[in-house]
Image 1 (cartoon, rainbow, N blue to C red):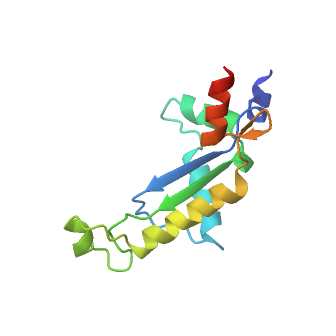
Image 2: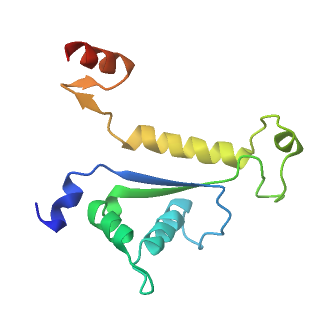
Length: 134
């Protein structure tokens, strides 16, 4: 297999950055801004050895990689301060965090194929069945 064919055997990759506090560049959509940020992060840097970046680019071309930025669970972007409930140990998640997580989960469930072995879904029952046969 040539170097340019690695991507054919690798699945999609999803990067999730939690507690993301940077302002993303202005774009038509959040997804577009996240894609632009990820592509910039994977660009080779002259001052560093880029083995990891090169490997990620080789194995996961742009159409197979996605970035999701996820807010801090207890800090509202609007106010910039931590919720008193969150700081005191009570589990009150910020609305932004919940929205970000919902968006991430919906993407995973809608765009990632389910894993199968012998045309059986790989879930708790499938794993148990597979173990029984071996």
